[in-house]
Each structure stands twice: as structure tokens, then as C-alpha cells.
Image 1 (cartoon, one colour):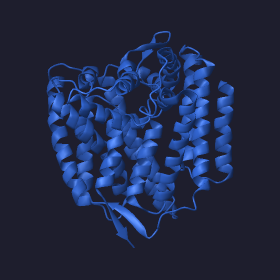
Image 2: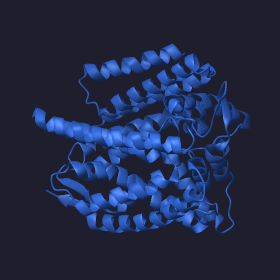
Image 3: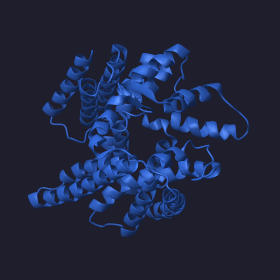
Length: 417
């Protein structure tokens, strides 16, 4: 089954390159990424003594990959139904800067508390644990601040990571917006996490390919490469620094890098059987987990609880925090792949239809962003950031990720040209 999955991924890539697909088209990125994930898993069980997963887990990944590509195929078949290309959408930059300013302000307050804890002897791992869930009171933030953090601050951190690369490559740069984005990213680095730096690397690489397609002169392309390379190197160094700050030895960083990509398949194998033992379905609640979490919190303020909401959050988030043995001497948590959430909804049917919808949406966003429409370019890069995090979870299960799209909806404006 594993060999067939490799064959399917490589075949998809061969077809893409034969059709001269762009490197930033969703089918190319998705198949390349999941080829790397499966390679990482193979390396992990061959050299790191990871357990060999069941054929069922591999089949779920294979179904997800095939369905994602089929969703793109369906989207391309419907491509004649395009919206009016004379109508572009752009962000209301003034409103964005106002909201970003308040996001920076609130994040600075939380970051100051983190710095104070670090000064008192806490290390990076302690800080990560203290961030906790959105309902927790703690030394970093109280329950109300946790809600603001989840539904406002984190979404604007995502926005900063996708807006910054595009703004830096523009001829007419908005310097105040660039400064706000950089400040938002910098003050967020005190949380002990590395995902922000990882997302910045993805955003810059995708933006780089967009810009390279516009340039014809070699000197212009070299300038773009140098700029992107410097940013990527800076982020890699920061990620290494945070890893060391969290107590990881420098010699183990490469091993952990591969483990992060590999363990999603391992934990998928574990949790699909846990879910099967429960004998339930979430009927689409996991697919729309970001908004489900928001409504679950809203209802809880009035003492109203939904059993299906509770089950979705428990098995889609809370239970995944427990560490599970994935090999001899290795324990991991949280990483279950995006396909696990589709499986929660409707078993194998959920994997097929959830992945198809994902592929369809990704391809639709890609076609729209080719119109030089900034809003859809932001949205497409954000979707690709989600793909690069799909070895962890379904990105739309996170409220902060879902709410980025909500904010884009409210701060956009239409422009006729």
C-alpha cells in the first residue's frame, strides 16, 4: 500500500510537469508536499525505529491525495464559469492598519508577560505549555484575553505572515503596513513556537515564484532570489534558536525536523482506531471545526452544550494533546494529518469528499489570484500555508485560521478597472 501511494504521488507529479504546470499550482505543491511527508515517514521507520503503520492509515492518505487531485480536475472542468474579470478586490489598507495596530498592541502586552516569565527562569517549553487552551486562566493571559488571542490576535498574525512578503516585493510599498506586520511577527515570537517562522518561509517562497514569473531579466531574478534566501536563512536560524531555547540539542534538530513530518502518519494510524472504537461520526463538524469552536464557546457562555460539538472538540483537539509512543524512545502529540478530521465526519466517504472540496477550493483560489487580485493572492498563499501544515491537522479546524478568511471578507473592497 505504501509503494502504491508513492507511485500515485509520483505519477501525479509527472502528469503535472508534462502539462507544464507552474510550481505554485495547488496540485504540484500538494503532491510534492505529501511525497516529502511519506518520504519522511519512510526515513523515520527505517532509521529512527518508528513503528510501521497499518495499511488502513496509508489507504486514508492515498484516498486523500487522489481525491484532492480529483477535486482540482473537477474545478478545471468548471473553469469557464469565471466571474467578471473587470472587477478586482483589494484590502482596505487603512482599516487593515488600524486593526493590525491594535493586534500589535495587545500581543505586545502578552509578550511582555512571556519575557517576564523567561527572566524568572522559565524556558521555551514552559512558555509553550502555559499558552494552553483558549479557556484557560494563567500567568500569560486570563480567560477573556485568551478569547481575544484566539479570535483576533492569532488571525492577524496569519494575516501579517501572508501580507508582508507581497508588500516587500511591491514597487509601491506601504512602509507603515510593512512595519506593523514585522512588529506583529516579532512580538509573537516570544510564545516559544516555531510555526510562525515556518509559515513565513512558505509565504516568501510562494510569493517568490509569483514574482519570478513576472521577471524576464536575469539580474532582476537574482535580486529576488537573494532577498528570499536571506529571509529564509533568518527564519531557519530563528527556528533553530527557538529549538535550542526549548531544550533541544543542536545535533537532534534535523532528526526532529524529519520526525515532525513523519509522526502525522503514525498518529493518524493510532487515532483512527480510537475513533472507530467510539463508533460515532461528527457529520461535517470536524470539517467546519473553526466555526464550531467559536459557536461552542458562545453557547457555553449561556450554559448550553451540544454533545456533537463536545465530541468534535474532544477528539479533534483535547485528546490529541496526550503523548503517544510512535517508535522506540519517541513520543509525539497533536499531529494527526488533515485526513483524520475528514475521517471523523463520514469515515472513508469523508476523506474522499473532504479532500475533493479542499482541492476544488485550492484550485479556485489559484485561478482567481492569477488576475493580479491582491485579496485572492493573500487567500491563496494562506491556503498553501494550510497545505504545508496539513501533516499536523486540518487547518480549518483552527478558529484562528478560519477567522482570517472572515476578516479578509470584511476588510476588502471592490475596484472596477
